[in-house]
Image (cartoon, rainbow, N blue to C red; front, side, top):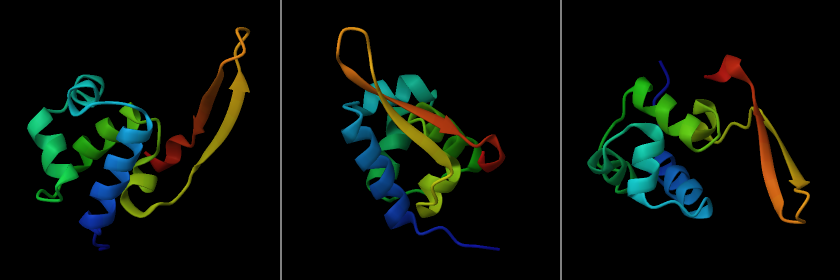
Length: 97
C-alpha cells in the first residue's frame, strides 16, 4: 500500500486553487466539500478520504493521481475563445479517477 505525502497533496491543492483564482468557499461549493475540510487540506492537518479527493480533483479539473503524487494523466490544451480570451481545456483520463 502506498502512502500519500500530505505535504505535497496540500500544496498541490492550494496551488491549483490559487491559480484557478478560487477562494476556499468557491472550491467548497464546486466540490461539495466543507470549507473546514479544504482549509485542513491546505494546512496539511487531515488525511482525506478517496471520495473527498475525487470531489476536489473534479472541481479543480485534474486527476486524483495528480493531486496525490503529481502524476499527470491529462492532456491540457490552451484555446482561444471567439472574443480573444484564452482558456484552458483539460481532457482527463477517467481510468485515473
